[in-house]
Length: 146
Image (tube, rainbow, N blue to C red; front, top):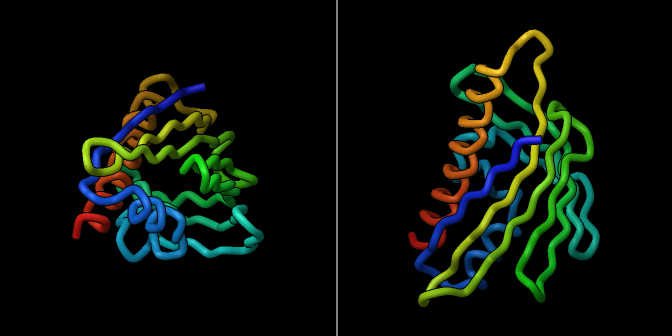
């Protein structure tokens, strides 16, 4: 299963960056690749939401239901797809106070199979996933520093 790891340093306090990330209903306001995000269930630090994302390269929309489990003490969020277009999608956000700001680390394991497409397309999809995660990080950075 492909694995992606990206990180970004944000010149903003950890609590501010963490609060922006926890407010996932607002993602469509500042993330170009998130078409819509609807919270369907919320209880304590567990949030279930329906996502519609955009893959501009293919002009394709992907849909999935995601469960987020937030750990406020450790400043992490474990997330996984409950159902949707991916064969598998799960990962972790980790927020670390560092150098007078916050480092946001994203770890993601995913599987997205298109039966008739080969290894070349899987490489393209992998690059799109990396670009998407880097775009999310850039959006968090812009929102927190702005």
